[in-house]
Image (cartoon, rainbow, N blue to C red; front, side, top):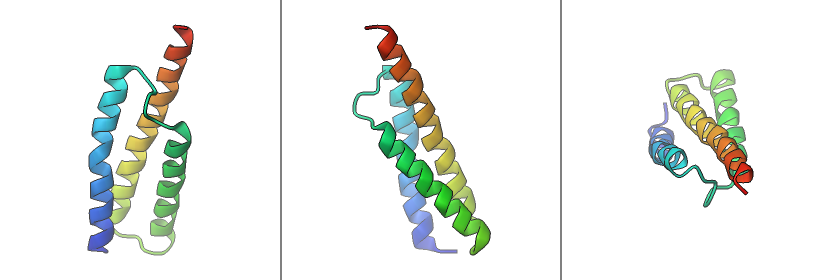
Length: 88
């Protein structure tokens, strides 16, 4: 297990609950990029794949947790975008 990798994932993961909460409250896509969220999702999937194939350890669960949170924010982005377009 890499303690530095764990710290990185914990730090990234700490930001997502705030981002998700903001998406829910604001019902807006302002300040967020769907493309960026997709890039993060692909990165987390790559990290998960690496852990499963080569270094299966407890850090895998941090990757999965972060992937779930980023995916949630991406779904909220799509929902909020639909809301924004319907109110024009």
